[in-house]
Image 1 (cartoon, rainbow, N blue to C red):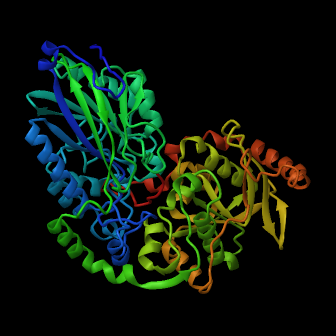
Image 2: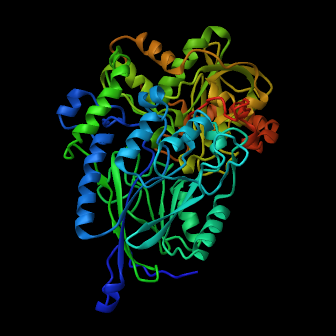
Image 3: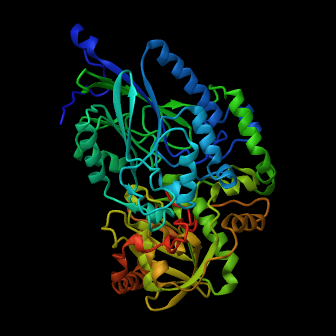
Length: 587
C-alpha cells in the first residue's frame, strides 16, 4: 500500500523538480441537504420574503448554483481539475420532498453538475423504489460499497460500490458507504442487506489499487466519528468526504466541532454541516505517484452575499407554486422562539421536544394514555417568534408520521428510555423527549445503565414507575414499529394502533389551542446528571423509591436490551414490489 506525506493543512516547500510533478484536485462537497431547495433561515426552515430582503437567509439550490459556477470558472482558468460530490441524505425535510419525492432532487442535482453521490439513510424513507427512481433520473453514479442489493428488484444492477472518474489525466476512485443502522433509522426493507463498512471499504480500496487507481476518496454517510475510525484503520484512502452527523467544521463556522479538515492520523476528513448552508471545498495536492503532499481548504458560507442564480430561482419558485398555499397558511402564533437545536434535542430536554410530546399526549389523554415518547431526531427545525405557518410546522415534523398508541409494561418503558440514551455521545436521533414522564439520564454511565428516577404522572401526582404495571403510551408509527432502535415497542407493545392523525396536524391543533401568547418552555422533566442545574439533593427524596423501581424494571427488561435492532421495524416487512412501507424519521 502506498504511503502519504501530509503537512497538516499547510502547503509543503518542495524543490522545483518535484513541484513540476505535482497535481491539484479540488473537491467541492455537500451533505445532509434534506430537501432544502429554498433558502433557509436561522432555524433551518424555509425563508420568507421578508427575511430574504433583510439579508437573513442562506443556502438554497439557486445560491449553491451561483457559487458553483463561480468556483468552476476559477478552477478552469487555473487549469485545475475538480469534483462535486454529495455525501447523502438529499431526501426528506421539506415540502419539496413531500410533494415531488425526489424528482426535483434529480433535476437540480443534474443541473448543478454533481459527479457522484453516496446513499444516505433517508434515501430509503419511502422504500427502495424512490431511491431507484432517483438513480434512473440522475446522470451521475450513486455509490455504496456496503449495500448488497442483489435481492432487491428495484435496486439490483443500479447501485455501484464505487466509480472511477478521470480528472486531470489521473484516475480518481470514489467509494460509497452507508450507515449500517439504516434499517433502524429508515425503511430499506429486508431485501437490502447492510454489510460491515470497514470490510467493504477495505475490499474496494484493494480492488481499485490493483487496477492502478492511486487517488481514492471515501464518500460516506456514516457520521464523523465513524469516518475518523475508518480513516485510521483502513489504509489507502486519501480523503473522507462525509455526512450523516450534520457536523459543522472549520474556523469561523457557527457551531464548529473541529478543524476543516479534521485529521485522522495522516488522512483528512471533511463534512459541511447540513441543509446547504455551507459548501465544502478541500484541495488535495498529489505527487506523481499519487501520494498526498498537502491538503487545505475551508467551507464556504452561502449567505446573502451570494446572489441566487436567476434561472434556478425561477424554477424553484415554479415548483413551489403548488405548495405555497399550504406553506403560507398561518395557523397560530408564539410569543417566543421554539428551539429545536440538534445538539439539545438529542441529548437533553429541548423546548420543541417538550412541545411535541405534550401535543401527542394531549391528543389521546382521554384514551387511557399516560406517557408520550418522541425521538429527538424526528424534530427537524425550530420556529421563530410571531405567526406560525403550517409550512413551519411541517418543517418541524416533515416525515408524515402518524400518531401510534399501545400498551407497555413499566419495565419495557425503562428499556425504551435506555435505548433513547444508549447513543447520546454520538448525537443519535433516538434520544427520548417525553410527556407524562420524568427521568434522569447519566451520559457517563454504561449504555443500558443510564436511566434512573423514572416517574409517571398518575392521578395528579408523580409516582415511581412500576415494572409490572401496564401503561398507555403514545409515540409515532415509525418508533412504534421499532424505528431508531425501539425494538421493545414492536416486540412488547400490545393493543397497538398505528394509524392516528398526522403528527404535524396534531402539533398544529395543539398550538392553536394554546392562545396568542403561547410560549414553549422546558420544565425539568429530563434531568441530565453532571449538567448545570442538576440538583442531586432536591431529587433525593424521590430517588430512593424511583431508583429501586427503575432498577427492578431494568432487571426485568434485561432480555430486551440486547434485541437485534434489525429485527424491529415492522415497516421492514416488504410488499411484493420489494419496497418497504414508509416509516421515516431519525438521523
